Image (cartoon, rainbow, N blue to C red; front, side, top):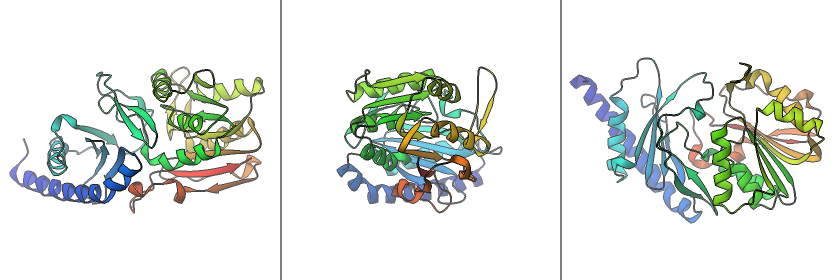
Length: 321
């Protein structure tokens, strides 16, 4: 139980959060409906004392608290109730989660539940399986919807490589844009299966859209040995991860030059790599890549609903080989 003073404070915060989210919903709803975009952000820690992120999923709400050691368990449900009432969403369609602040290791795949429940949601003329129940992340990183469109517009006739592919959304966009082939790589069996289901959902054939379950560096080594090459690539790694097989750590701050050099080796002359990270203190070291240019395009890739004064949701570079 929480004391009356804390309860009054939480209720006041809930009212502020609900009002802000409702205002943003009214501002964004119509334009995204016209674009057939079902998923968009309503709030992300805009008020310092309200450490939450709120996303709209076509009548569902996914609400997460940025937790810390002295997080109070009653706080998030109070926020959830207020948001549900303000946006007229039944409580069974409200999904409460915790996002741990600081260094994480592969939490994008950590299970919270085992419902295996999927909801199909639209992003433009593509569809994706979303699971708001079982994981912290739902299956689609909506902050990259602009980047996905850039890839689609460049994909015609290209051989496309998608590393750390997660549920394959970039590959679906590339295939829809006329890519000759797509190759999607992830170490997680869950992710690769999910990517396959997203391909099937969009009627994208398995014969030209390959899915590979493998650690990234292992795949890159093998692809180089087989002289495989590509015209277009997306590299969007987690900030930190640890190999389950050998305990080897990947830290994007330290290891991105090695990763990008290995990708560049597979790229044909004149090809393009989109490289992205959500690491909040990232310092790029791209001078030794031997590429034509590496230009940061973050201002073009972050959609309006993800723009924030508090943080940059991701950073993105367009690298020309």
